[in-house]
Length: 548
Image (cartoon, rainbow, N blue to C red; front, side):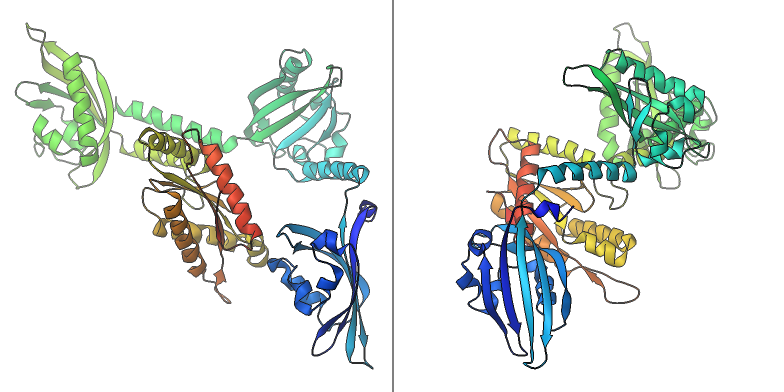
């Protein structure tokens, strides 16, 4: 297929003589001007003339081609050049080398080509790509005709079916042939909504039973497929396993149930407050849930307020005063000091129980509950929903939320703001050479360098595999470039130690953008920073480029 794709090509043919002392270009023919911007005479003038058109990161290929090792069989490979205008291009090189012992030289023939795409071949490649997607995706992807029969599916479907070893065996079968009936009924009902023309897309969270009988959940989405006349001829679906998310939700519900149970069990206490005097009566359980013995705790509003966590005190007292002013009940979670000196999470419910003749509150009753365990679990689950598990940075969703808020603040107060897009150079090579475990360590090391180099107010997010975004509040373009360069150097100086061998060194490329107008939004800032990142990579990596 590769040969067919090269029906219409531009090419340059070189002949070289490699001696122990020099590389001599003996002949250049072909479309040198078109491919490189240089004339044949310019390319053959001296050894550096050809070398300088190689992309800096592909000079290893140059060294292989122009080594003294004999290579009588043609070798074809792909590499990049940078033409006279600075535009990078991908070319194919075919070379042979013959050792001339008599003349102490190596004769090298080199042909560079830039193939034009054969659309018929490209169409075939699209089909091959489609098959590769079906074989390698993590999602459950399937296509069906109007008879609910599979016409193709991803290999992952095999994991949830019975009697099937390859997705191609599903063709012509329905869910009822390969799944338990109760599950097939659920899937069929959703597909009816598509085929009846009710919905262009139908979505449900549905149960899943894998090959080993383990239950789970999928977010199942089915889309109508239509012919050129608009008639529905089938559907395709994408189902994503959300079992872990559902389990986390179930765990959160369980923790809430434990909290409600705590309010009626031993880990809760009632109180009765005289608003005028501040004197408080409380049940015997109140000191116990804070680690005190009976009689050790002063039951007063003053003691309770003094024990509040400094970060929570103003918020709690504000709600208490609102309750006193309005007479409504209120509930709040907060931290207070226990006997051990530790901060424990509590929940308190306030309610005005008595008013005087002027309808002024004189008595409040309520409940204190120790919710420390439940709250820690809730905070942990909430953190997992917002934090990238590997680097402990903001995940993409949480980063975007914070970025939107910061942009709104920046525009409201007319403050500067800058955005970085940052990518680890040759991260795939790190994974391929050292393994994904070392790759993960590199990602965590980069996150640590960012935290150490940047300010606490700067917002850092991991938004892709090795791609990071950084938002810098109150930072103009010039300041952002200085920060980006400082960060780049700090990363270049960092190393990941290896048990056996030299430490892994890595670099980053950074694209910088800044707020240019009141109409800017986060997507625009990220897009400009991403374009600058692309420029940094095209310019040789391990550098900082700013959006124009």
